[in-house]
Image (cartoon, rainbow, N blue to C red; front, top):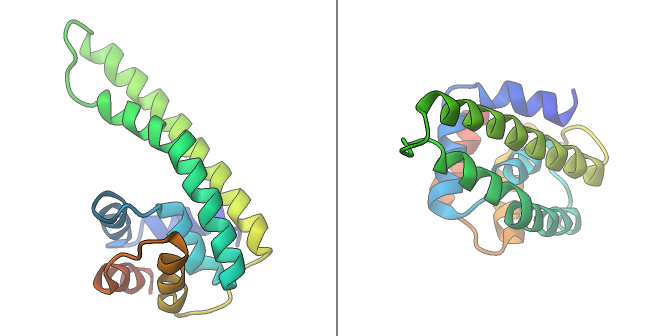
Length: 147
């Protein structure tokens, strides 16, 4: 199964979305990068390359798109609510496309399907490669939801 398909199916599992969003919003982690680490279990060198790619993509592309989507959530008078929410949905589609492009690029770095049934070692290594590892408990929450 390709990483994108795995990520979509996995994100729908109980607790995965919540764990990913908590890691993203509270610990400055990148969801696609963490899911890729759990999926592929890449070597430390490949994790480092993936972290560099994901940090750049987050800073230059995904972060600004996400910020625009979030800015469109509350009412913005005098902009009509229906038009604002319609635009927000269009931005969500663009954000998902940017996530997919990152995921496909990360998958190409690792060159293949999963290497392990236990995602925790890969998540810990990804946290180290990211540069500021989140608390072990936060990663364990994601690993448990992925199981």
